[in-house]
Length: 308
Image 1 (cartoon, rainbow, N blue to C red):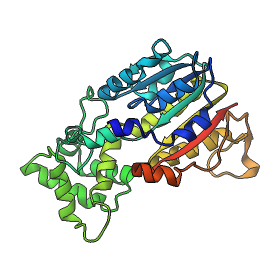
Image 2: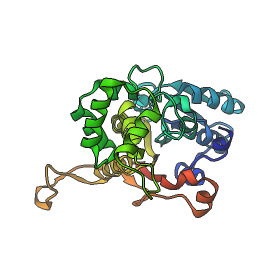
Image 3: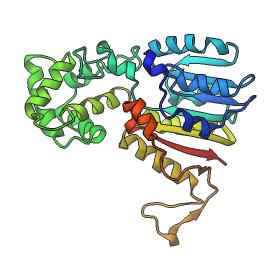
Image 4: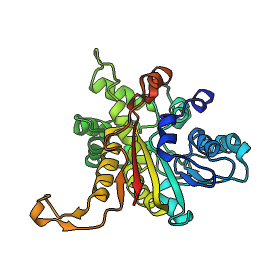
């Protein structure tokens, strides 16, 4: 954890995007261990304010301790960033950050079940208060539903074959551990000389499904726009193409001055007032220096937009 605390992803780029100022109000929907939050509070000293939340209770405890030096200038809650607009006043924020995906501590702690690197329970819940785990999905859902999850959230080409094998094997022994699932996938699709483990996409897909990450992102983007004031900026860090595509399409749709139904044909466009403008038309990537210091940042992409 200590290592991650000192290496928040795209830190300089996030601060450049949000431009924290004294007296400003900001929101961090994915607090994590508090790295970005601490930087925003420091940059907006002495009077900046921060609302922040996280689904992970352990991360929230660590972040609370880390932000102690800024006592009186923030409010933290345990919850999903999709609910930001339910407790943060509309039109109140100068900036909002969403740093998506799974954190290094979640990956590194075997008991959380996010990774196949170490054996642990097939859990994958960001919020351990919710009842559904990865094991629940694998042991209860149909082969068709498992295949859909693997295809839609993991872009797994072998989704149907993997799903049939999972349903077959769980009859004799229900799925309970990360190693059990990883070994099944590797048996069906031997690693050979491939750099990535054959279960990588499967684990990603299950994690996204367990935590409703795409649904949360879609609701969270809408909520973030609500809590921003005109001129307020939204910075979103994604870590895989599915997330980035959602953010890109959502932001481009709201930056257009027209709407359309079906195919975008100029003659059928309906004029509308855009809700935001794109600060950066292309995603901002980590620098070479950051990649050397923090290899896990290699898949990070930052998109920045401003409410009109």
